Image (cartoon, rainbow, N blue to C red; front, top):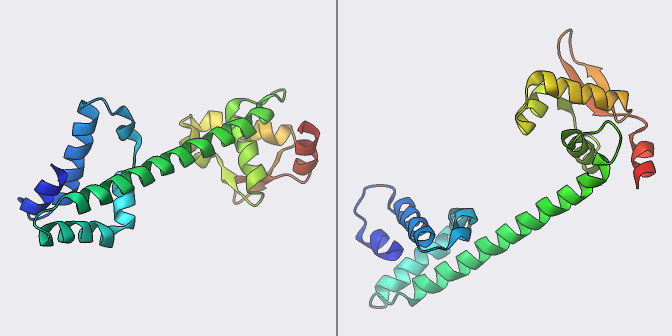
Length: 180
């Protein structure tokens, strides 16, 4: 279906995107639920020349779909491997953040902020970023950041009369070592 739509080329633009959308729909319709989480378009974009060659070789060799099928299967495997790597990365982040959530007065958002600072010591936070990252109110974001200041993990940096940024405190490393 995918290869045929791109070969027929019924639209001026968007044939590849339409073909991939139909492919996703067909896979999901037939119970391949994991397809929803695969980023096949990203993998194809990274290998656009190979993608185009797969179609070219198919046309040149009497519409032998083997070239296209081989290419597409390899890219699906790559997308699946990328998904597994992403899941593993996120699981490791959760595991690492879990040790910080054990602290008194630290909620899950604050634990994630501590983990981010631990991984990136030069990171600067502000309430707007925390609000957007965790989909919380600005008030809650400010409360979390102020609590981290009170606990000694962060310190405030006044940018101007209104804006406050938050950075790693001087005692951060000492506090984190005490947790481990």
